[in-house]
Length: 320
Image 1 (tube, rainbow, N blue to C red):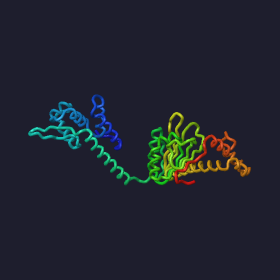
Image 2 (image 1 turned 30 degrees about the vertical axis):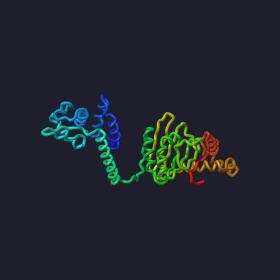
Image 3 (image 1 turned 90 degrees about the vertical axis):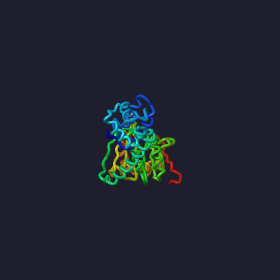
Image 4 (image 1 turned 90 degrees about the horizontal axis):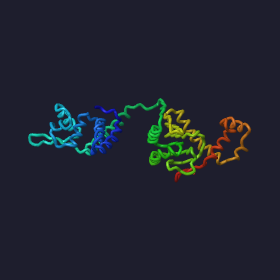
């Protein structure tokens, strides 16, 4: 039986088998199934399972206790020896078989799979063509959003622009911390304008409510200005995400984060004094640019900012 699992899923299966191989009943059936997922044939899994319970035994005895046809048992044992799962013990004119301890077998398999995974990564990278077409991925599901976000964060090398809510900041806290530990320059816009730090955000943190997300949460990531991930989580927990290297989407998202931080800082600084310095034409333009529900763009932004805390936290040694 040939497995269709990704190689990096095998390690999880190996741990599960190590947990179940010393148990009885249904969990042993689970271990047999997992061994087959790792590449054992049904007969190989059954033979190893039987050897764990009855050893040392001859090939004839193993065929009886495992239910494997006698015509097949020695071919199965040869394959198990090649896998490093069985020890052949010669005793005079007879040959008996013992199982390699489960922990020893599975640790060796884990090492081989890890080596295969690392080699495959290098080989595939060598033949892969760079993504220059700017494809757009449409992703659904909250766990998939987080998985893709982690992949994006892992790729960040120089700088990282972030716009997030505290829920996703906490869910990705270790990934943000990992980027910071790699000396990635992080700028974070907290869209919820939290009155206190959630513990997940890193770098320069600006807590500004600059957009009304209508009962949903947004997550935006722009690593090195080369890629973008934008996700939305509804009040019901449904998530939809877009991930791309398309230059237009990267620039739009990066400038949304930068402009939001800059506009909030300027409005906080000048306050109501700004009105006196604007011409009637500018007031008219701002009125036209605002949402229909607001008097003008300026009034809309002030209402948003006043509903949250306009503030920033610079990392130690950061800009002032």
